[in-house]
Image 1 (cartoon, one colour):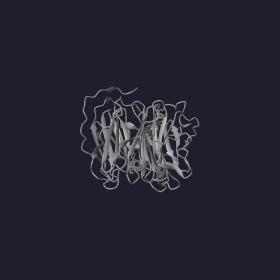
Image 2: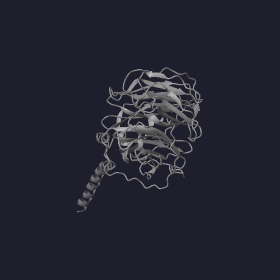
Image 3: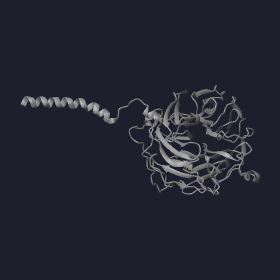
Image 4: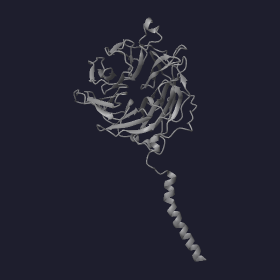
Length: 461
């Protein structure tokens, strides 16, 4: 069932004054997830290895809470998240900054603020430079990651329940042995089930510097892939400079309301660039600059989100927080400086709520560490929320099977036996287990029955 859309008679409003969502040090990697039931779920990481959560409901944010501790005990980096139709939130992250393990956990969306509702994290890969996650239209779960190996671009795994995962399928990235798949990946899946991946290459074995960006797609669940497409080939003199990090980097990919595929990336010139494909990633438009004058930066990809009319909203950071909108007919508004404060803005994100409310999220990662947000209304179709899903928390959610084109060799990845329990769980109030509850209920009854039996025995004696 799809959400019903209605035309909203509203004008573009000014940006609301920026408000802090998290005042403690130091927030990083904010990751918003908009569910179809009217909620916005926001995750972010701190410097102590905790992953935090807050939910936007009826215009107000809940009190931030820690819901997961990274099993690797390092900072959780590169967070990615999605929600499925059954009401389950899926969360992915990496341990540390270079070649750390990839971890995954899930929880019911309607109770994600309770750490006890999260399944303990499982390790999906022992090392990676980058990773991304997406949910297919049939609720199958896909993860891509870059294994940090010579000449290897990325691998894909899939799952029906978030517990058993397929064996990795490695894409042919056509990299030489002095390159490896890099730290920036993006994954999206269209309504047909085709998988779209944007990734970057980096030098091996150092993992530095970044070098080029690529796009690949698969129409058969990852069994085969298109040849890597470079949307912006480097000039020979830039390509030949092995040490410079002023190359193409930080790709992103997204699908709009009309199933067109959008690519963004940072160009070696310092410009933020864009291409769009109207045939599912086969052919592409001419390059166009999104933010032509921002200069080189390393603070995160240009993020994209789409409103109820199919307009694209983008955000970038450089000496402030910048925003722009691309209409569904391809016209760009003028760049707007939303927040002019000079800070170490990184990992900026954009989300569209209810079809016509645009939210921006951006943390100051090194100075204050505060996570900020602002929002505005736009004249696009409002999307009415669906009724909340019914999810029995005592049982695992039921996932639909993978499509016929999905990988068939599905040797499960075993659950680790030494997965640390999140600190939030250990420090939670003493909640009785099922066995303890039944013990407390039955013990008085046993005592009473025993007393009756003893009385009868004495009377007969």
